[in-house]
Length: 370
Ligand code: Q46
Ligand code: ZN
Image (cartoon, rainbow, N blue to C red; front, top):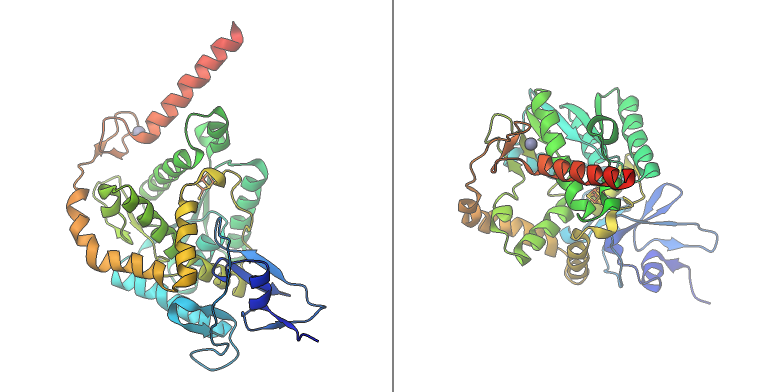
């Protein structure tokens, strides 16, 4: 008779890359060595957008720090941790990021961009816990009716439970369009308009609200995938700007920081689960057009065969190559002719996108009226 099935064997049989999921039994995280009985019901929760594939790696099932049974494996550090030591490990990575890049001080007012997903809520949780003055900022992007409503609710519930301040901007109500509408009307890839909209509105909210720093939940996987995409196309000016902390170079441009850049996506998900943070597990309905998924997938395949690849790639760039690209980032910013926000051109990309949408809507109205 075969013995009980281990989580590792289960994932193997299902051909799932352990790097891309967390296995949960009754709200408890399971390591790959944990055994399952016939009566066990487990949730295999995807934690990486688009992540899927084969085989597993073996990792010690005892906490590296205290030798108690481990709850979360961190193959890239050749380690596994119990819940408490894992939370401590993640917080240490974030503290290290904040200190090494002089991201902010306790006296600074932070505006934290929150989507309702695991990364941004885990980060907001950490910053509040560490005693920072951190206000949440959520944009209702309308990438889908249900998704928009659930994302907002997650942020509001989180804020209410912690007595934290949350600022919300509704794209449809405040700006008169939705990302879904742009996607439907075609021509532009939704993620590219969405990205530029988020950059514009978050910067606007931070500078108008008098916040010292704009904080985003980009994690190690996001940053490594972006770097790979930029390197494949040799977009040197984007590569130069891919730093964990970007200073303000214009009076209407906020300082921007990414305190999670040392923490992987799987680790932020584990953090959120262990801290019992309710986050939106579903992916954005428009995610299919996101090119970053391909790069994440490619990096995850490498990571499975060679744990630590993603951090080697990203940290290696920051340590050794970033100074070589710095010269590519010498753009002069001035106020957009229409909105006054900083741009290297005459009219900023956001105003141009809105102008195109207005023109398209006007043509549509004329056609309907004929
Ligand atoms: S929200 Fe926006 Fe993402 Fe949806 S439309 Fe694409 S960029 S996938 S992080
Ligand atoms: Zn503008």
